[in-house]
Image (cartoon, rainbow, N blue to C red; front, side, top):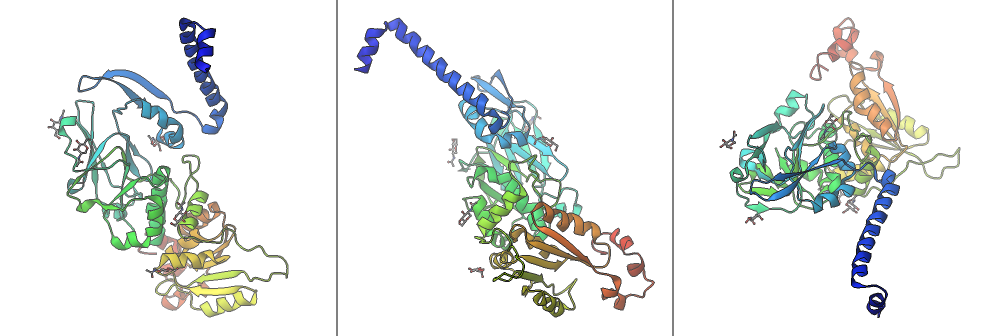
Length: 437
Ligand SMILES: *[C@@H]1O[C@H](CO)[C@@H](O)[C@H](O)[C@H]1NC(C)=O
Ligand SMILES: *[C@@H]1O[C@H](CO)[C@@H](O)[C@H](O)[C@H]1NC(C)=O
Ligand SMILES: *[C@@H]1O[C@H](CO)[C@@H](O)[C@H](O)[C@H]1NC(C)=O
Ligand SMILES: *[C@@H]1O[C@H](CO)[C@@H](O)[C@H](O)[C@H]1NC(C)=O
Ligand SMILES: *[C@@H]1O[C@H](CO)[C@@H](O)[C@H](O)[C@H]1NC(C)=O
């Protein structure tokens, strides 16, 4: 019926014209929609389109994305449709050499050969190019980097690409679990947070390929890894197959500061990371207890982290006793290997106290507005204490306090004569590096 009314009202020619007008209107609506909502969507990436002849002789469009990678990251949802419509060929991989880590982001087919530690992608140029990347995010630390395998990222011509023996339909991320893994601080600062920054955008639809794999490390952080990727991790060093992916990232993005995500260069923040961690470990407490004068039924909980071998408290019992006197429920514990259980313990507390050391990284599990007390041993620890824990905790919406051990309180005076360099000038020891400290 509708058709016949239309046919009566308009001639064939007019109907055709009407069709064009309708398409134009749709286009206008979409355009104005984009314009209105643009501020909310963020800037659209600038796309450079040009025509070119492919190797095969077929005409195709080359899309050169001139926006920076962080912009693209932010806009990945708006730019995707454009990229889907237009067949794409990016001449160069986006290999970025930053202050703290190197990574290559290849938005094109890649082929990964674990036996030669090489990632291939096809080049439209005659010349070959190649980059060497150690996929661990603590670039200027020679010791850490020497424990991470070097990978090459190579562009070669189509016919020189190795044959795929396993095809994947999701993007790949290659990273190292070598370096300083096993140290809790480095686990988070050099691997987990960079991995979150690099992979969260894929919402689980990403394949992790780990190099320098340690099974204990993968087991320790399985809750986090499982929430970042829906697929079993591949130990790429052991693979004989050539794994092919529609795109991939070699190495991890990392921001300048320790235990930090800079929201000005990432769609995420450290707050998002903490929420993600709380969800991964099913941690219930989002905010610390709020004290009301004298009418609290529930006691605030104080967690004292005791270390056994180095930088130990010699009077843990007394510290706990004072805590109780002030109305705290006191928990004294050592950081334990079952991270799931330990994360629950930390999250259940309102105040977290410990001596400077990697165990303090567990503050990540604290609820918002908890209090974190760093005890700083006598000696050259100030700079490390500040950059590794004080500043990160303040960015995490945790209230920071510190207690500096005076020489009279330190057991060092029993070990060194009073005029020894260790006692007289501890900062000179600090300058000699971590081993000396
Ligand atoms: C590479 O790093 C520089 C400096 O950190 C940054 O300005 C630029 O946007 C980055 N580019 C890409 C493609 O990531
Ligand atoms: C590129 O590399 C291949 C081997 O991987 C070599 O056969 C070819 O000659 C190289 N091309 C140029 C232009 O260097
Ligand atoms: C992988 O995909 C390519 C291209 O679609 C195809 O030629 C090849 O046979 C596939 N290989 C395997 C092992 O499925
Ligand atoms: C992480 O995993 C847990 C348990 O499987 C799930 O309940 C939670 O929703 C996941 N969180 C995210 C952010 O994916
Ligand atoms: C770790 O602790 C959790 C309880 O918090 C428990 O469910 C899990 O089985 C423990 N894992 C191991 C390996 O002991």
